Image 1: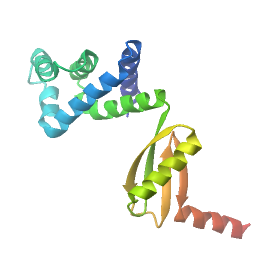
Image 2: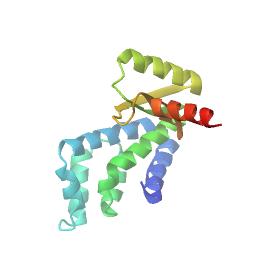
Image 3: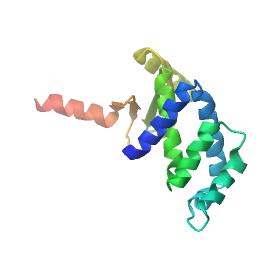
Length: 175
């Protein structure tokens, strides 16, 4: 994501925070994302220079008039600036800002095999104890890992993979 895109998401978040409507804007963005994921042609439609900007803005109004005005205006700005295709990553950045402000951390966990619900719950509890606040976990399977986990949380990487452990042993032996 470009710095410019981060600034757009931050501006939206700050505007919503002034009105204490961060969650409402977030909910509206999620509805919009859902509409875009159901029909990927919306990106083409709202990005098309063949369609006058006035018509594209009217399409946004008619499709999303029931949603929070800041979210709708945000999408209109992206449409005007030809940045509609960045909408999903901007929404993700907005969500990251929302989580950060509410003392919630987002952790990406890669494992060699799919974690069970019990393992996810135990990991979540350990991370919350480590961080001192709520942690939201997103898990994925990385077939390149021989075993263990790699956790990316709050910009820090915790490498508890088998490969890392073997490298640590190798370092000790080579001393």
